[in-house]
Length: 171
Image (cartoon, rainbow, N blue to C red; front, side, top):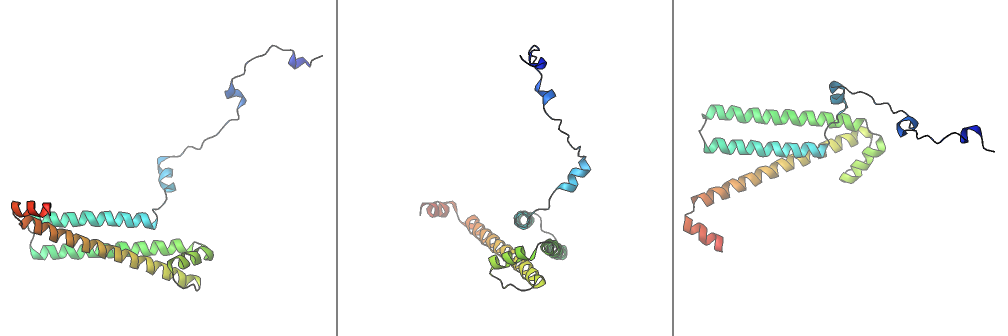
């Protein structure tokens, strides 16, 4: 016949007893903050662009609203330039450190994608970092030119009469 265990009545065993036990690590709020990744270079560029747009909106609001004394305005511009310069230096230092941690093959791939010349690791890192810095500067300059064009066109449209605006819209 049948083995003794097969002759017993069929009993339904809950699945929670037959499945292996899973252990979960408890993560504290402080530990979770340490695990967060730094934003990539493209995310930083997007963030810088967003900050630059907010800054330009603040400057326009100041120009339209109450005018600050020339000395105070000059100090503010210098501090913004210093802050931007400091932020750029920190970004370059962190990117340089990030690239130094990469294997040479990956750095060589980045250099080739950028259209730069391959060399030793240090030279390639400097070439990539300087190329990225140049691209960020060009992007900031382009955004500044675009803001200038928009401000000038807005001033032209505000100076036009309603009739002139209507004829402009029809054409």
